[in-house]
Structure formats: structure tokens, C-alpha cells
Length: 293
Image: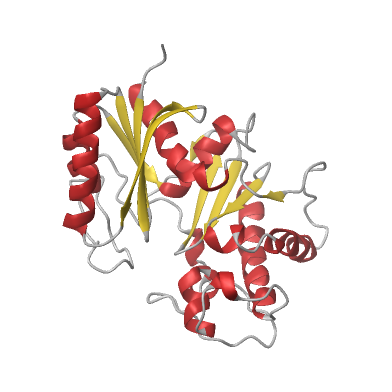
């Protein structure tokens, strides 16, 4: 029987833990609210230790919001860095969860994990160059080039680029670091700050969606020009609750590219993740499979 793996996806609102061999063989799933570091990681440690004692698993994968220190030579490898999540800067995510699990572990961003899952089991199958975008509590991009997530002195943070603004839209944005970056213009908290209501309650014909689609198209323009992935999947609560955004964003992306680069023919270039809301948690399982190698 194939190895059993544990996965932990840490999000800004909730954390999901899976015990699985793959998307068709999930033994257990638990959810923990993202509150304080000690409360959240403590609850996750308890679950992992119990799973290890009860079932046993070969490796742990961790896909987390960030930013994260992913430099293996760094003394703070596996910790949070300058995250906008209050109280989480410096959180020792990898160290605490790996100790509780007692097995090899691999950590990456939640979006790189989701990209890995979609490339293994979903809409990115057969691709070595792929991008996964989540638009929810924050905006993150998992950018895979030649089969590997991009890595330099840090992981990519394309959700914090400063886009050209939609003419007439001068809202200052909500990002505490950059104001009107992509995250500060399109995330769930940004829309709440701008309109006073959740994205799920905003009508599909509200003019704010022109601003959101425009901003996401600007980010996709940068991704296409920088790495030319074969496809881009867009998930997260804001987009899954407003699926009209994907087609609107692709139309604006094509207009923005202005014929200079031709997107691959066939399926829509921008697409919903095949794994849906499970892309993130299954991404942690895909990362665990890397830890076992």
C-alpha cells in the first residue's frame, strides 16, 4: 500500500490538516482557526501527534501563508518573516510542527503547494511551467518554472506588486506595507475595507469588479512576461465566490498584452483549479511527498 502522508495548510483565516495518500484516499481532515501562534500551532501539534500515534505517516508537508524564510542555510529557516498577520512574525512553523510529527518535513508557501497539487492531480497535469493564484484573505502566487518554484533570496511575492491603476480608480488600497498593491486592492479584507461588506455579498455587476479584474490582469501580465507559464489557475474565496472574475480578467489580460505575446490555444488560459478548495490542503500532501524522497 502507498505511503501515508500528513499535510498542514496554514491560511490567514483557518488551517486545514489532511491525512492522505492522495485526493482519492483521504483518511482524516481537521480544521483549526488561525488565531494566536501558540493556540493555532498547539492545536495542530496535538492533531499531528495523535495521527502519528494512531495511524503513522511517512512525512509531513506544510504549505503556509507568509512571507516565510525558505533559505535552508538560514538560522530562521521555516519561520514567518514580515507577515501582515498580527502576532505571527517570527512564528516557528516548521520547527514546531515537525517536532510534533516526528518525521521528515518539507515547507513551502501555500500557493506553491497548491500549484504542486494542481500539477500532480489537477488542471496543471503534464506542465512544468504553471502558476497558481489565490485571492482570499491575501493574494499569493505559486510560480513554477522548469518544474520548480521560483527561489532567489526569497520566494516570489507577486501579490504585492504595484499595478497600473484602472483609469478613474484612485482608492488608496488596504495593504499595510504597500497600500494599493494587488493584495491591497483585490483581497477579501481589501474589498471589506473599501465597501464595508464581504465579497460574497457584492453583486456581480458592481463596478468594483472592474477594478479587481483590472488589477488581477495587471498581475497576470507580469507573470506572463516574466515566466510564460502554460496556464494560470486562479482560486481563493474571492474568486470561487465570484467566478465571473476569471473570464473578465482574461479578457483584460489579452487586451493588456496587446498582441505582443500570444497565449496558448485551447482551454481558457486563466482557469479555476480542478481541485477547487482542496488545492491548498492537497498541496501540503504534495509537499509531504517531496519530503519523503
